[in-house]
Length: 400
Ligand SMILES: Cc1cc2nc3c(=O)[nH]c(=O)nc-3n(C[C@H](O)[C@H](O)[C@H](O)COP(=O)(O)OP(=O)(O)OC[C@H]3O[C@@H](n4cnc5c(N)ncnc54)[C@H](O)[C@@H]3O)c2cc1C
Image (cartoon, rainbow, N blue to C red; front, side, top):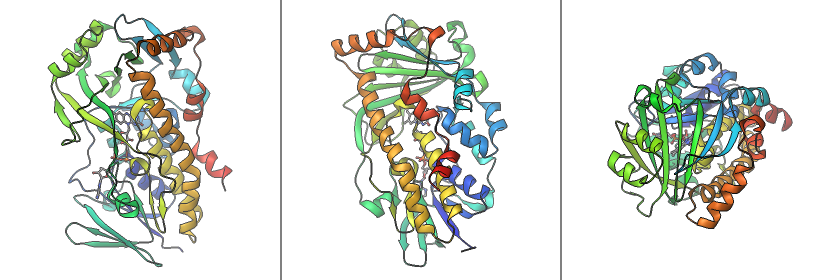
């Protein structure tokens, strides 16, 4: 079928990457995004080697390198004393081992990098999809203003509150994970005296943690604190938080952390949700990707990376079976569901490790971590090898 046409619902990291990957393979694709303009929350995002490998394949390597930072390691610290607990390599060691760089970036800049590869004619903004229908010949989507569009396949890349998912599998609310995320961006000069180093810093305490790193080519310092909370602020998916509240949340923490929070001009507070793995993401000509398919907790910094992997693999499956598009979607789900279900489970287990309040568990955790805290002997734990070593191109060849 020469004239295969693909409709993508949602212009987040997953939807835009899908569009780029499909276009690279010469597939006709149109994207529908509900917002009047593309946007990402003001925060940082780690672009791990498995995701960066794909962005490089899409020709975005130079643009990404310009805006990103290149952390040398992941450096785990105790919340009160700042003692080093654990140390795993990134930087050149990650690039040598996994064949692609590990970056950290400002979300808006990552989005700009992705958008730089797009043909704006293939994008419809202010386009909220309210209904999807399919028959033996194709799919039809309907927008909130009544306009319709037809295609051969439809990809639901519309995030954790996915409309496409609700229509395919029922309107089930995501699970509140019992955690909220605090996010802040600080001009680098305000924290320069803290000598924070070129690392992803991970501070672990009872009930809460903080991850931090430079973004915007080193001009901005980003931090994300995750704390257990029985008040998920359900009324608001993403709300303005208060610096005083964040300081109260991190009361008694090391002076470095408190100084960073106090120097933050604007804090965001967001309740964290996930879902159980879904066994299948395809119904006929329609399939889900990214957070619509497999939302996960952020402890491995992998949600975006997995949506990028999805995008590339899906484009490969579709392009390699243009005359059998339903088989292409089935192959995509077979390739991707087990890995992302594993990730969803791993992220939940990591939540227990990071956020526990149990003194004995914290003691045991810290003792285990201390066995691997020397930068000289630092190596990659097995789950990182499995995560960062994933090469979507190789996986496509293996499953051909
Ligand atoms: C605190 C935190 C830290 C994180 N850190 C990292 C990290 O370091 N690295 C990493 O890889 N991941 C990280 N993640 C995960 C990552 O942010 C998400 O997994 C990723 O953004 C998902 O992308 P997506 O494209 O699937 O969905 P989204 O980004 O949610 O995009 C969905 C898009 O669909 C649009 N949409 C929704 N409904 C409709 C509709 N009906 N019609 C049209 N458009 C619609 C939305 O407007 C939106 O633009 C983190 C997440 C959190 C919460």
